[in-house]
Image (cartoon, rainbow over all chains, first blue to last red; front, side, top):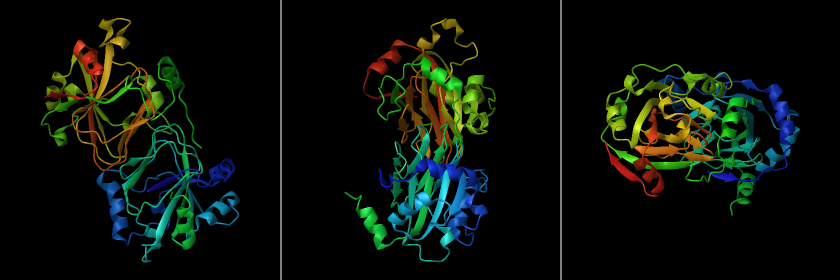
Length: 191
Length: 214
């Protein structure tokens, strides 16, 4: 997993968040088309919640899906393009205080039976870190991120999050197919 | 965008001596992870709360009441005497003159929001007089090994990868803290407040982790 500081600093964060607020809805991904229950890995992820006495349909936070260059978030178009993922799914996600996402592996269920080996996910922080916003990837607890930092390249690494702070945490999640441009984007920060 | 800053949290924070930097580097005066380690054969799977404690003071309720959360979203809580008897063996060896313990079993999906501890005890410590806050220390005794998705924060420091028996000391009067369990297993601990003894002060002065047999 890479935490790249200052990767996308040019975004007008306050403008994006202001617009997001009016679009955001509490939503579990399973309540949209993005969970493929034909996939045994996805079913196992849902079972995780059930086994622990939790409701798997409880929202993990608020969401707003959009398509790049659809005019909803023009401030993000250039940044998304610079990351270079093909067939990119764009979601702004917020984790409100008290929300959590159980320890899990990404299954990319919305990609159905397509080859998932080249699918990559990038998270762009749209808000600064606040104490008690917990993000754990494998053995690493992240902290002190700033808006414009990204995390990426975590492969099959398990991860989970919780927000025990007083403030909402907002991210842009990009999921798409790796391209040469994407690999060049990462290489720029690999030193 | 949700933002809630309870007044009581700010007041308690301002009453303490912590510099509010929330830096990951924290003076060991405020936090020791662990201060000492208890060695024993207890089975974490057998730790149960038989009768839940449902009450807490208004300061606690206000700080936990963020975004619709309540006390039951923190953990399952019980008094020592309402929990597994094996825990008594642990509290008997603690370096306190007198102690009061609560069991906290944080289940997957539960979290205790960033908060400051208010002194509690419902009169239990009143015999210590007005200076009681200076005479009491608080530790968290981890009753099982750490598992992924279990995390605590003290000041700006994340605490994780603890071992069963670790006694985490923190200056409850000064340090803001919060916890979450987004893992797959319960996280049981014993939170003990005790009257400080010379033995306890010696542990604070000692830079190594002392092992205490249960």
